[in-house]
Length: 114
Length: 108
Image 1 (tube, rainbow over the protein chains, first blue to last red):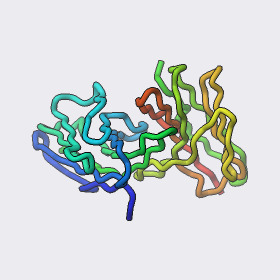
Image 2: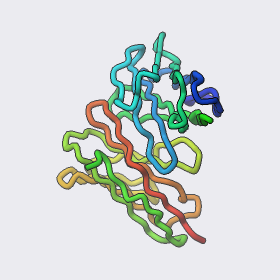
Image 3: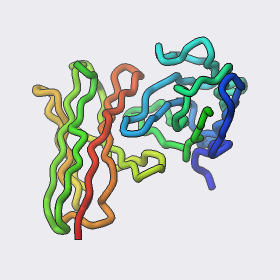
Image 4: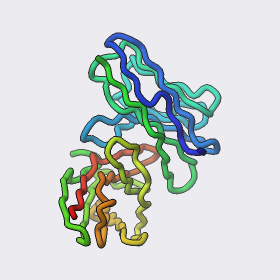
């Protein structure tokens, strides 16, 4: 399967714990995006990378959130000291930065903070 | 005003009907536009890009009106399998904004 993959698919954690999610983009894609989606809403942009450089971060990305893409391939999103309000689907997408930028999404990681 | 606005629906239509969704955007400098489809508890999947000249893919037609800052999606001959949420996406200088989606339910 050469699509975007995300791990884990589901995560249940207790409030205050740290969690880390991984995204493996389509191999030739140089852009990688993280989104958060809650029920009844569209995906909300969190941050994106071009190769290993993090080029933009949303105001939604509080200091408890950090994302990395150390070698310009896979990316991780860490949430420290989780809160119940962090419960959501975390989606990763990748794209080629050429022309019209079509993003391809992974299956998401569904986080539940108890 | 939200950057990208969609009527959340739901639109309940019988099989075979034609249905249209609109999406308005606030940034006149927006560069590219897409419609994505999202099934319940699944990731969004690209349905089609939207070009100024309008484009068609089978039963689906997308239009862009830059003057009025909206895009539209027309679905002809609705199928049960078209039931999903349709997300409008607007790109502005590398900033990607999704609408909240319009839910479509096609009824037998």
